[in-house]
Length: 181
Image (tube, rainbow, N blue to C red; front, side, top):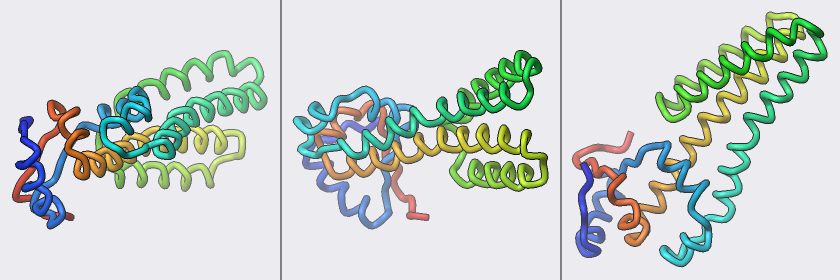
């Protein structure tokens, strides 16, 4: 549940945040959308912090996974000729469903373990199939990483800046009594 804090209450929360006795939580999807949709000038005017480099990293992370899927489709066309007319739509449906269902859910470790497992399996497959598995799994992993990174950076900004906190307060949950782990 959102806690609407005054600036004084926000400043009183700072020692708890720094000690790990409280933490700010904001949904990953909101975090990614923040970096994609809110202009750097707006953030800088509101908070005094520039996010230009972080926004660039997030935008790059948003652009690369679909490009990797396109590279995978090109590889399928090159390797499988007419069979690609069946494989590419199936891969597209699979990729779209997985990115839609897992992008902002789960934890980083589970996604990384799944990606490493896919790399291990790819090492056992013939090259034509291994490239497909590697491109798809790496693009899905990068897609997920964007959400985690955006959330991490946005929580840092929210903890440092009351105007940023106030701007997104309806999406923020303060968890007290938690220890950093």
